[in-house]
Length: 262
Picture: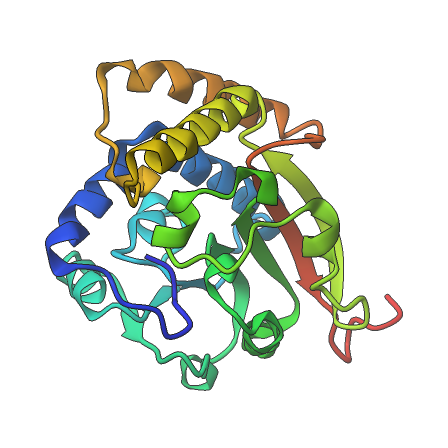
């Protein structure tokens, strides 16, 4: 569960279900594999491993998935999720909506995976992350894409917005960040996702229902099919950027005093 900007926290009864979905649902599994590949590409240098901060880490599924990085910290606003992560031996710290990360030290890598859409003041969040990174440190961001996909899923999950490539890039001051990669993803399945979202919105409107978050959908027998498609796309993303998709990724390096002019 991401770090919210004052929105209600996760229902305690839902935490284990959410964790199970993160572990097994095709979208979370493939996104986690994509993030892992990005970390390996931009942060692994020989035997060296980065010091890693995962902001809005929920119960720590992503942190657990990359054992090659031993020095890692998560931060999470939801105390129930944090306690689950702690019970699994992860270092997950409590953090408030003030985005005060100073006590955690400095990091080579920060991940913001589907967090920024929950934050009203993006500038404050990115300033805090910039300060937490070492010079030339790497930030990996994923966000939902395209307001045309806006649905009750976004409303229930307290999203403020969905992004385009241009709007996401516009949040990164070129005096502070050097963007090295930006691409849509969840692209091959984009027509299916678009159709399902529109149908769900229409059906809920006709029935006068509030709708449900995608995360509450059960993992069905066909989970392997979209997972296989998404994994194929993860391989494509190692070579090309996608022109359209239901999500966006961005990789940026911090420009500090020592990196200016390099």
